Image (tube, rainbow, N blue to C red):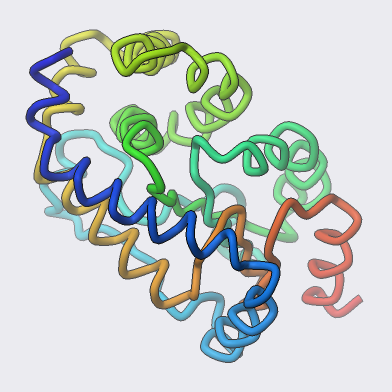
Length: 242
């Protein structure tokens, strides 16, 4: 455990700096949220995102390792509506969305081929990053199931206590999803992969004007905050032309 945390030192320092910026922005979101959303919407108007979808090359070294790389699509890749969700795995509002709203969204729109979902992780703290690394190291097929468990059990693992206890809970979820301890160690110590995740996060968040989570783009239309199914349904139906 101590070895993993030490090797992550540089990355964690960067994340904590980003976290401070994110928290400051979140505190002022009531004043600036509408302007930011409008700017992001203008940037993405006519596009699903100002940051292009990331599809790994066939020879991507992380793909060869069995990681989930780039933007992972849930649902029909040709669905008429694309929902991009920026979420932190340690964000309580994000967990509320995935527990309370996401099941209906999936049943009514994703499973029916009307919409596809892409989750882009936001790293406002080190543990949100570590959890995302586990989810991605499980591979593309297990990526969303891992996200489900991290959100459903968020209060348990984020509230476990000190760093060692939280990391023990994160590792436990990794094993719960079928990942061997050796695989967990290898993933958590893969510093180049972590650096790439950080770079992608910073570029995507800047391009789409992400300042707090959850943050959604529905065919480029921004929605900020702990949105419920009624609002999500309205925006998706508008995008579908109905």
